[in-house]
Length: 371
Ligand SMILES: Cc1ncc(COP(=O)(O)O)c(C=O)c1O
Image (cartoon, rainbow, N blue to C red):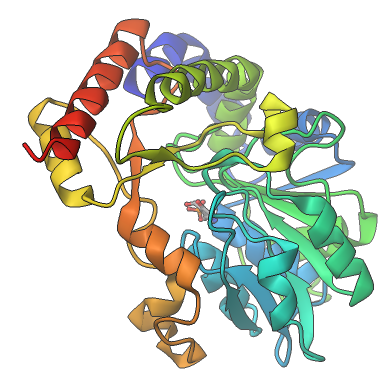
């Protein structure tokens, strides 16, 4: 991402200077402008800027009335913040398995966890791929559940009609610097079509009120910094082109790896097979059973890889109290042992992509031949 910021340095510095000139450091006009632009970008009526994706999830859940005594279903194959936010608003996370092919929560993996106490479901558009929302929306409708999307990795993913974040009561985004749309530090936002939910979230991020020293409801300080709003406005203009480049790189990888022995690309769901823009490739993830050997051989060839994520949330010490022991959510547990994220960012050059393709192909063949 270094190269990406270097090419934008002039506009980012001008945006930061404008915040200094206006003295608008906490919330204020630069955040409001970004909120309007981001709401328009995703096709929602309102966006509420906050300090992080975690804060966006907390604000959305709280504003949707989720709290103590409620159960909230979320996938165990996610970044831990999805689950932390549920616990932070006082609700009980109920973790569900994921589809063995897409590694996303679906109606089929969530339905068995619905109880009378279930108040909400939080599908995660993990790796940048839209979860299959038709089934999940039907589940929410049938059981009168709140649907909050964790779209922290899926800025701009669309099924052609709607964008990630606009399928339920609210959608939550992270602008952590490494995300498809990243700030110059921590930031996040939620989007919604509900004026009541937006108003409740605005209060929650500002000590429970929108007028100074008037506190109508419980709230904390989750305001977005002015610098971040200003920087995000600059970067939002380029998001579509960055997502398009990510998809181009992904298409090359998919094509090159289709026949490789011992390696599988994480499968596309039905929506992404029909509509390529349904995946914005925050990560490009493959599965390899000899993962550690695969990664270390790639590393010897100068290719860095990641793991998203090495431990499903239900097996983390922090969430042992949820009493979902090993073996209970087998698809996610198996995936956690095999997933590898390959280099994926919009500034990858064609030559760099070819280096990755050559190295991955060579290592997969070596491992297959027992070398
Ligand atoms: C799926 C998911 N949910 C939530 C978050 C939390 O966002 P943040 O790091 O901005 O708090 C992240 C980002 O790290 C994420 O990837």
